[in-house]
Figure 1 (spheres, helix red, strand yellow):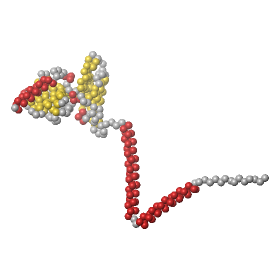
Figure 2 (spheres, rainbow, N blue to C red; figure 1 turned 90 degrees about the horizontal axis):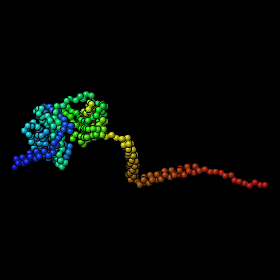
Figure 3 (cartoon, rainbow, N blue to C red; figure 1 turned 45 degrees about the vertical axis):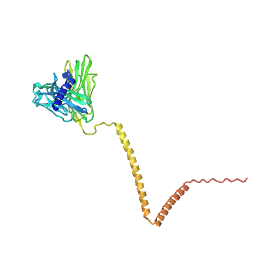
Figure 4 (tube, rainbow, N blue to C red; figure 1 turned 90 degrees about the vertical axis):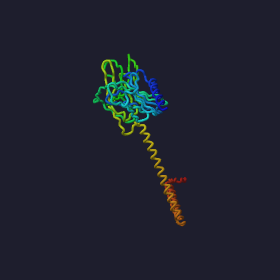
Length: 340
């Protein structure tokens, strides 16, 4: 029975691959390019949450099966890759694999398909090829705080028509495509964003001569080299930036208005605390005085009351005397009739 279930699963793998894989995947639309070496790692980490149905890898053209993973039935590998493919499942939605003992025949386009429920299929295209080393020594340094936005501006300075502009993240083992803008006969034909950057990359392709990329909510994993390459009929042009992500201080920029509100709020809170402390001290002293009086002899309490009343009478007497002294008396002379 279990063998029948496994055979059904293999058939389901083939059917899903045939139904979900696109027939044409050109090099310009790949999400990543990986350098062909003795052993290669092909990253495929689905950002979605949900239930994992299956992970499948194929090689183009021909949709040749490489490997597949099922949470219940485990790993299935084709004869060509048997013993050379390992899944690095760091998380449930991670379909990253390593291919060992590679040869020139392993170069080509690979596609990873992560089948999830309820969102469906998540696909990533990776091209394995002999990459040319890129000179990163002239990269301009740029620092961004964690959680902020990384802005990469590119302007084409030479003459001639620009065919496309490509933003890439350059690493030691490969290149990840962030976004690409293509133009044909003066109008933008295509805007492509790499699958690993769809949630965070913003690019405006309205003007391919002056274009900018915004990478939102940067993390430490975003550190590295970023390039902007113009493909033109005359000559190409590349701008490279080295990004450093800082974790010191707050990742959010606070405006002066917020500082003003914080200062005013702190002042009001301090005033309220002073009033409460003064009230509490007075209440505590009054309560302590009442306890002391309660322990005295009735005759002593009477003397204290008489003393306080006398002190109050003296204050009132002095106040009245002061008011009397402050009165102004005017002597009006008496008029007498003169005798004639």
